[in-house]
Each structure stands twice: as C-alpha cells, then as structure tokens.
Length: 195
Ligand SMILES: Cc1cc2nc3c(=O)[nH]c(=O)nc-3n(C[C@H](O)[C@H](O)[C@H](O)COP(=O)(O)O)c2cc1C
Image (cartoon, rainbow, N blue to C red; front, side, top):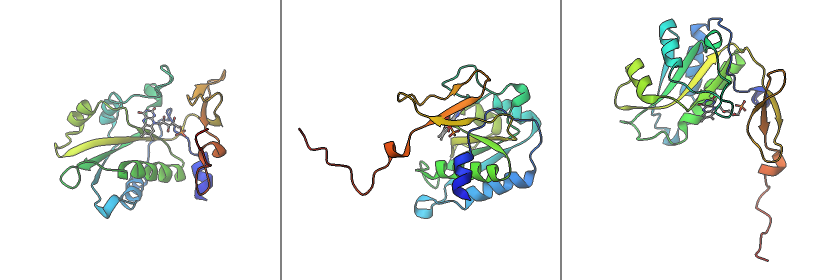
C-alpha cells in the first residue's frame, strides 16, 4: 500500500551500522531510473557510495537537521550508503523536477526494504566533486543518505504555524505536517473578492 508507506516514511538521520546489501542499493537506483522525467530526457546519473573510506569522507560534506543544530548522526550513527544524484549537463542544463522525483523513488524503495533515508540538499558540492572525482559536465543535485534506522521520528500537527521539527524530552524527533484542509481546495479557490 503506497499511501500507507508514504504516511509512515520519515527522514532518518541516525542509522545502525548494519551493512546494506548491494542489490538493494541497485534496486533503489533502478526505481529512480524508471521514474518520470520531463520530456523523457533522462539527464540523471547516480553514484552509489558504500566504500568504507568514502563513506566517512562523503559524510564530511553533509549537513543535517538545520532547525536543530545539535541533531546529526554521530560517527556511530552515520549513513551506510549514499546515492548521489547528478545531472548530465550535456543532456539538460538543470534537472527540472526530475531530481526530486528520483530522490523520492530511492527513498520509497529503500523504505520498502526496511531502510531509512534522508534526502540531502545541503552539501559541500565542491568537496564532494573532488572526493568522488565527478566530471565537470555533471551537476551535483541531491544526495540520499541510507541506512537501517536507529530512530523513529513521529509525525505531528503544525502548531501556531511553526513547521520546525523538534525534539521531545525523550529525544524523539517530531515532524509537524500541515493539515489537509489547510493546503487543499476542490476545483477553485473560494471567491476572495475585494471588500
Ligand atoms: C530537497 C530536500 C532537501 C533536503 N535537505 C536536507 C538536508 O540537507 N539535511 C537534512 O537533514 N534534511 C534534509 N531534508 C529533509 C527534510 O528536512 C525533511 O524531509 C523534512 O523535515 C520533513 O520530514 P520528513 O521527511 O520526515 O517528512 C531535505 C528534504 C528535501 C525534500
């Protein structure tokens, strides 16, 4: 049930150090490969990182949970793999919406395989390019961090329009989501005629 899985998936920022099987990682990227692409141009290239030494170096290019300065994976909670999403500029200058769609496909197939994931946009791209030897024609779009979850964030209500995720007394992460009625309308907006 895709709806149930989407409802339950949360970004995971703390991972166990259990190794991820290569075929699961390949499956995640295969799902991204088969995802919708504007004009079907398919400009995306994917780098799977799971080499022990590279994992630590890539980790040093990432930033976590901007609203909570002290909430990030420790060395013992680091992701066990990354999928780096690149855009081949020889095919398209920018990825349009393809990168986000691909990142979600990766996250959902990961989730179906009991993995946690976190899409990462805050990256030191210069450093990452040099570490992974990424060619000039490839733009670094997003990374998806992967690993077996060592936390269970909770979905919550947005209170007083505050969308920042927060930690409770037990250190559990709460992720506020806006209410459906707040963000959805049927057919047209109600008439806001000038009064
Ligand atoms: C495009 C994009 C970039 C993101 N970049 C980061 C990031 O750099 N670091 C991070 O910790 N989380 C990042 N996130 C995760 C969001 O913070 C997270 O999706 C949001 O707080 C909602 O939580 P949820 O995914 O559990 O629903 C990113 C998510 C998206 C979609």
